[in-house]
Length: 123
Image (cartoon, rainbow, N blue to C red; front, side):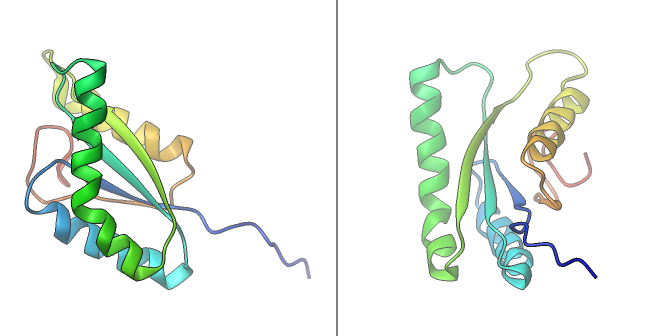
């Protein structure tokens, strides 16, 4: 019998700078805590902000939830994803978030029930 010593795969939390980010992180922390897995914290940014403003916006989104992640004693990986400002944006945005989670080998993605098009749980 072979025992694998691979690190646990992250759990992604999709954060949209809304009040329900706290509930999203709480659910992601619960899932990650079961396996002592890190969190991939995906800050979803508006399409129209420039790179400097995007960095500040991403930091603000993460600052709201980092105390909860720290109290749980879990590691985290910050990431950002921009909304797509075109027709069919909902599917493109959802595909982009899923692709980001796959690149980071996430086992699960936690998102709010409602939110910007493409980053809600229904997408």
